[in-house]
Length: 420
Image (cartoon, rainbow, N blue to C red; front, side, top):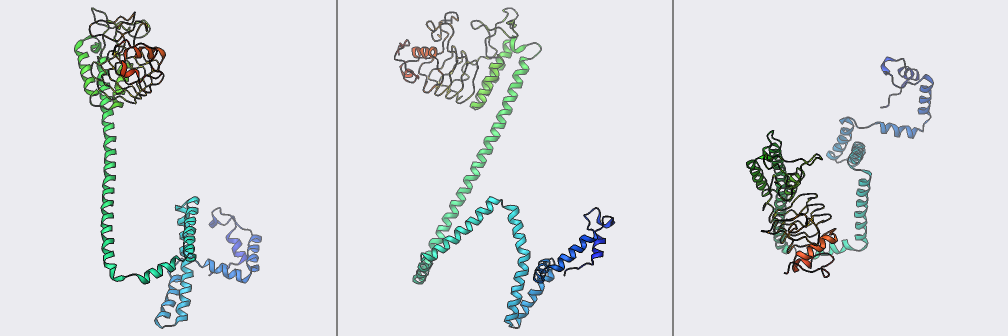
């Protein structure tokens, strides 16, 4: 029950100098008087409602009392007592249940989700109302009255069989989901393992190149070991891994022909902070050779990569970024360049009029361009991007009839110098 306090006692308990208040907001005696007068001036009915509201069922007694009354009414068949006890028990229990439900909804549902749930309830209620007005319930009742219950056994068997089929379908679905998850985990683990392998390769090549005696640059045995490591790792990684390795080797100048002192084997500096190149007589640290033949390097970033003199027969370079890549004297026979970006890609040295594909027997002439060009016979140029006029003329001349039909812009105005 409500504890009515004396005004003076209420004021003394709320004084600022009362040590029990611990700095809480205090009420002066006039404030306490106004509080009591406001309580006394309220409507008696309103006072009773407030008192009933204050009677929150915080202990089991408030719930147990109407339950006992309801039980007595049921035992002695006093309907009026049992009914009254049930009503009071419902009202008191709702005072506990409803706040908890409101807190749960406020905690777990956002305002938009609450609106969605409410709209769904309204939708179900509207469907139920339409069912009544359209006579759906009457049809269901008439169907139930005419239902042959002696045939229900066969229907139950059909339903059981259908349930077993659904369970089997569910089992297959769960197994498939497990397979997909396992496959994704395996792919992720393979990527991590591949990256660790590539990092180890980078470290090993760097140790050879940065050795105090310069073994990688000076001695053939160390270069052979570097080539062996490169060939091994290129055959065991995917397209992304191959692109990473090629970019690393190219930017490290390990794929470029370096000019060397013929007696000491030392690389010669170009006077601008780098090594001097010698396309005709220079020595490459790593000779790609046939390492990339038939490789899938599609959709990769190969910008500014030196792929010159590599054997890339039937390699898949589709949709790759080949901006400023060097493919002079590269064998691209039957390679796939569909959708690749060829902006600034070097196909040959010298002038377009004298440039010809590489030859097995005749050495290249980097001044005139003879035998410095890439072998582009039967290459698929469908949808290549940023092909310059110089590149188009060279490819049309030396790609053959099969590839000429795939070059953007056509080759009707350019002669086929390949002869086939």
